Image 1 (spheres, rainbow, N blue to C red):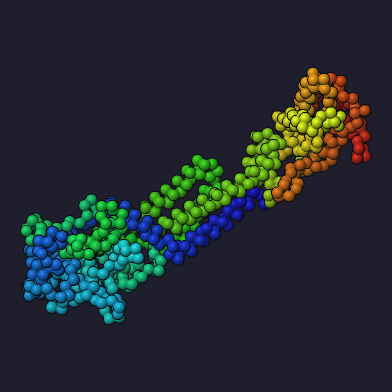
Image 2 (image 1 turned 45 degrees about the vertical axis):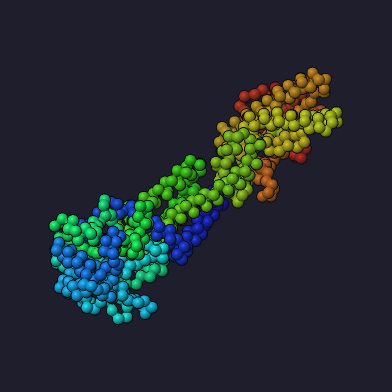
Length: 634
């Protein structure tokens, strides 16, 4: 299995585990608070481009109104006066978001008569969904049950109101939300009624729009209390939000005559001293507003129901859980793909930015189209898979690159080492270099009289001289495209034609040419060294070089902790025997002190490019048949 294939498999397994972990985190609620935070941001952004209808007006009793009246709760007389004044403006319906379970004289009779004579006025109750909750109902003298709607709101665990309610029920009764009561009364004048969906009677419709109740695991929620008939509140703000008049504005006749005509009017408290405010997505993401008055929340719910019935505006929808999982896996796969192609820092940063921005933009567009597609799980999947897999790939490639560089960088040119790294999948298998049979040229070189030289120098001087000699000769090999295979004391073994494998006769011949050119360059370098030695009155040194071309086996030898790339085979043995052929039979040049012997197979590759002297058929140690050898004339 190649490096890239193995890396892809392991990275895919790693990415799969990361994706599985995120799916578990999503389904167990670990990401819920972040999904809801992202939801609030989406609501806040989309609400700015959505317009409220002008059907709902809020009468907000503020702190100045309370101080002016010097009473709270408002007396029955004050409330009756406010309602009667509002009725004079001919509103379609009035909702009173103030509990009136107890009559507060004076003016109780006036209030009772006002409410009983105007069936388009609705009061609120607190609904009791269980025996542990105490209900708060309007005083029975005030109005009948059909003029009552609950004001309970669905508050999430973080204190934010994101969902509206149509109905609540317990074992005894079903109650309507105050927003639903007001919307139905307003729509009745337009001959629009609440109807069951023809395909599914359990679902309700406003005009042509069906409201599908929220389930416990919808969107970013996990195990939500989905009691009653819940839907997602939209909170559009347009440019100004709702028109809000104070109690003082109404009583002092500051309103225009047409200000409330045929409108839905909701009375409520907006004073900070009376705690009737809630955190909503739009207030949570707005630095200028810490909370939203309850009466405004009810106004939003009422307005949304009216927009659905009249304008056909659909409530926010969600996708099935299996589509959410598929969406998550898609982004995990994209993170895996991006990790594999982010092979530079600039590309890494660019792909990270492209992935995140694409997901966020897509989520926003889908949200604006009316579908809540939770973003945190797919974003986590993309980021975690991208970062973890790219980190894994970086570590693996760093280790592999170090191994490649350790094997090659000191023995071949930098360009060859880089080529080996870029084409590593062709060279490596299971962490080792692949064993291959190729045709290449092998060069051996050794010093003559090295022992006498070694005996004339102290150890430190010997090592210094030998290192200088090896560096010069190794440089000749690398400059001519060869690879240093090994050092044996004063001997060097070099390969031409590996590790980059040549598969054409022309390239094989070129490797043989490079080997001979390397040998000639070594000869010249040795001559220069001898000239310097003789100037110092030191004994000159001689060198033998053997070159052979033919089939060899190349691959890595050793353990995983210490690998060596080398060549073996009969061609290697031939080159070694040519180098070590007896000096008594092959004379060294008097001035150049270098003998270069090549095999006939090497000569055949050179096509007369060099001058040769035929040595004849040599009987080499370890070979039963003679070998025709040639000496390169330097």
